[in-house]
Amino acid sequence: MAIRAVAGVDVQPKVTIREARSDAIEEIDRQWQAQTSKTLLAAEDGEFLILPPGSGGSAVGWVRVRDSIGGNLPSRIAAATGSPEFLTLSADGHHLCAVSVEEDEYWIVIRTFA
Image 1: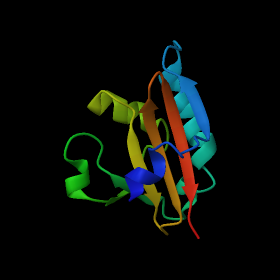
Image 2: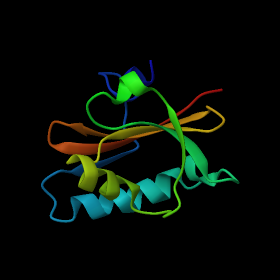
Image 3: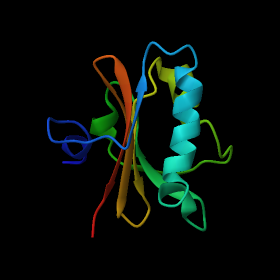
């Protein structure tokens, strides 16, 4: 369900970044911080849920994490997995935030649920 909320023909990204940009990963980091600072990253305790990126992550399911570094999450994920793609959910379950790769662009998708 969550993956369909950020990937599909009806999904509208909040931000698109051309993959060919020389500073694409840095721009993803900047935009991620700007777009998620009031939703995902605003939790008092700093915790949110992440679907482990890469092969097998959906089999693991949502994992509660606290980002002790506090910045550059997409580039840190890309360094570990080879891609900045990942899916997160605010601890209260109201905000789904993701980075996806779509053709020749990176998308930052933000979905809010009542």
